[in-house]
Length: 238
Ligand SMILES: [Fe+2]
Ligand SMILES: [Fe+2]
Image (cartoon, rainbow, N blue to C red):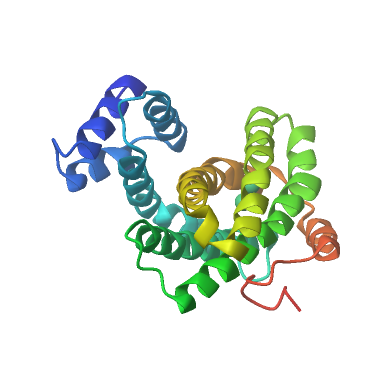
């Protein structure tokens, strides 16, 4: 199936013309690169609502979760790729919760406890920088040495785009009342873009890193030196 027709199918799913199940079958048959391109087409088109796209991102992340599971299994416990994939899972949970809190904010029924929770999550989102740093400083240069330069360049640009938005969300979350509009916008932006970023890494970047790179012990050492996020699962964080 061509990228154009895949994008068309995705559009029909987003607008409710065909069922999610039907699209999932197509998604499973397409390659990650094709999905990513089709998705980019949708992102570029202006007649798709951001909320709908968010929904779409969630569905396609689910569809490829098997891929990530396999990668973790192949790499094994303590392997840098396993840690990175697990951190992605934690980030996705945070984004799910952030979406819910953003929806409450929209309905104007965010209570004190939830306000604190929103702030707390925004701090964790800033912490994802440590994860990006390990990618940029340890993983990407090695991949570039192997001639894989396109995907790493795109990932770095996305890191750069997201960084100020994370900082801003964290800053505004200290005083939610006066900044509701902008907070909702930032949540929308980060939820969509971070999910999409994770999708590309889990399906394109990490699998090729796993196949192409060999010095994983040294990679692990360098990653240990940079350090982990407060939400990193496993023993790495200690
Ligand atoms: Fe990344
Ligand atoms: Fe990542």
